[in-house]
Amino acid sequence: MKQILVIFSLAFLVFTSCKEKETTTADKMETITDNLDFKSGYSEVNGLKMYYELYGQGKPLVLIHGGGSTIQSNFEKVIPLFSKNRKVIAMELQAHGRTNDRNTETSFEQDADDVAILLKNLKIKSADFLGFSNGGTTTLQIAIRHPEIVGKIILASALAKRNGVPDQFWGFMEQASLENMPEQLKEAYLKVSPDLNGLQIMHDRDAKRMVNFKDIPDEQIKSIKVPTLIIIGDKDVITPEHAIEMHRQIANSQLAIIPGGHGDYIG
Image (cartoon, rainbow, N blue to C red; front, side, top):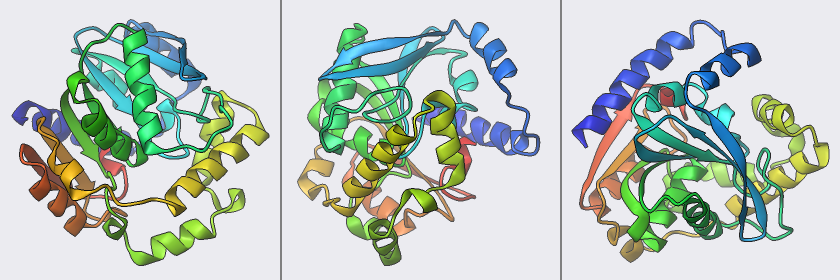
């Protein structure tokens, strides 16, 4: 776990400096992927054609994006860092980015099962996992439902209980509409999948899943035995109290509270 903390400390320093210059372009990303042993494709996963990307070589590290996001909108800045000495696997979950919708409601449990099948299809028997935001909740479910494939997990701004965010968050989610969806998330989706109907479906599925979110039972959280790093920002939507409680419930865990807002620590 010390190695993971060092990686994230380095990553934080790199990303804060990167944010001063918005230099990411399609041409530069092509150069980056060319230098990182990049591959991409689709895999048949529980009725989905799931889009995935592979980078680098080494022990597998799986990146799981948050709600309303794509691989690049969450992880564009960290992939070059991690893929220097890890095999990075990133995917887009149901209705997100380049992965289609299967005309069923989304759930964190189903996303966890989908990721497990993708790894099976890619012949990856075990991996470490980094999940951000909703992807962190999915990572919790992977550790609960598929512990045999999990080495270590990083829960980045993950939610396990409804009281883990301020009360007004739930009122906002009940009023969520495509019109008030953050513009950067809309742009990220349309950049890889220029389909306004698909954007609407993604938004509606994510919003409904959050409105209907139910607490993960304490006994399931306590069942997680793998080494775990819990990360939030000090100005995160996830409350410090929630992160501390997860730290207490997951026996083999460490907690890092980093200056910044929701996801600033991954750029």
